[in-house]
Image (cartoon, rainbow, N blue to C red; front, side, top):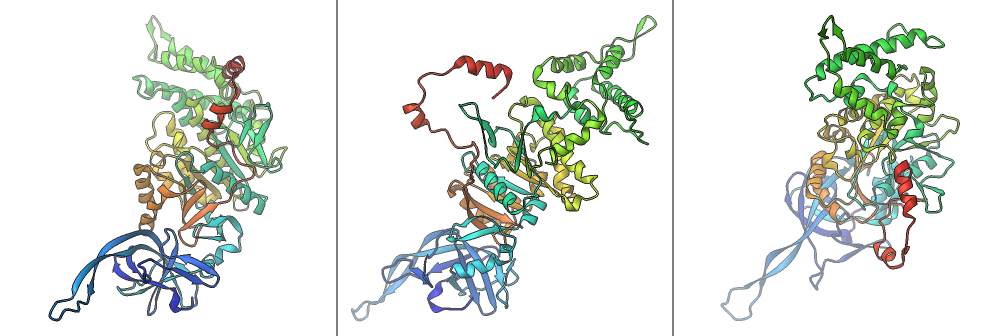
Length: 563
């Protein structure tokens, strides 16, 4: 970057490792000037803007993270002979700078800081041309997601390999634009890479919804997406692991839980082994475990459990007499609840052979090939959503774990509202979903399974999962607990940047991590079409909205669980 005298805007006055302080030069009127570079006017000291710090062979790039004023003293000459010069106070503008990288001798930008300046180093404004050079190495892959907030004429490109392969998190409070960002990112990803394989867990039906006229709207072009109601996809009980079934059916705090889990394990193993030999065609597996993904009859297991529960030895009660009373009550209540039919009473996935078709649908290789599979969980009962999410996460991992071409077929799983089923403190029904997603977070990169966590409450999401994310897309966050949690997750040198999150606009994000060459404040492009996530306009609807509603229709949809 060429040194030009008119780009000097200040000097460093304090050096603290990952924090620098600089006083800014003012014009004759005491104002911080606007610097002109080429045909571009740059407002000095704008939050989120980049500056260069130069001193001999030291050449750093830093971001302005705070602007403040400090009182300073200046001498004023007094014409009266013998009087000392008067000292007048005035405000001096001070910028807080966070170093993000270095410019090498060949002009290339590199993350990290090897040598720090000392006080007195010059602070220079930098224009769009120099900023663009720092993003050059990411431009070739072309995943342009938005514009640079400090230089709106510059497009920001992310590295898709690092973004998806090393996991990412999209964090922001309600209304900050998370779904907007996800939709925009996925749309641009598929446009650039049409053979993508993306699975989205949609908890609120934001990517496929029914309009008042009864027709459906979609957040993605119909040619690239397959929207699936989780109940129609059918994730049957027999695909669940022993641990997942125990989390769903057994209350571990009960006194009889030990006997329940032991006997249930024996029945489950016997049921799977029987399927191995009696299925048509015969599976013929050399080894079957309680977790082997083959069919077993739930009715047969319940019959055995019931018999054990009332077993008598001679005139005495059997060793487990009455131990399964609550177990049977719980599972029978679920079997009698139509909301759980997709799980316990599958209509399509009733044989071991149906697993192949399920997996083809799951990863977008079914009758309709699709780059994006949106699995709508909005109609799934709240208490069983973690169980379904656990199965989806596990199937995504297992598919590529056993896929010999896993390096040629990477998969991305996007978890909307992740705090709802990957909580920081996981007990009972949440244990399986947290375990499933943490496995992807820790091992998925090796087998081409990426994870994208989307949450409005980052401090409630599993710390293990977030700690494995290589890229953070942070939208507006005002809650101090969430800000502090995000600050603890990002590199220490970038922690000060979290302070800007409270002032971000909708769809505007601070992107940190491996998918960008340096921390970047990005205005994401508006998705087209947009998801169904806009805030309700109370003013307009309370002024000109409907005067009456078809309440009978609302009741019918509630009862039938159809939105």
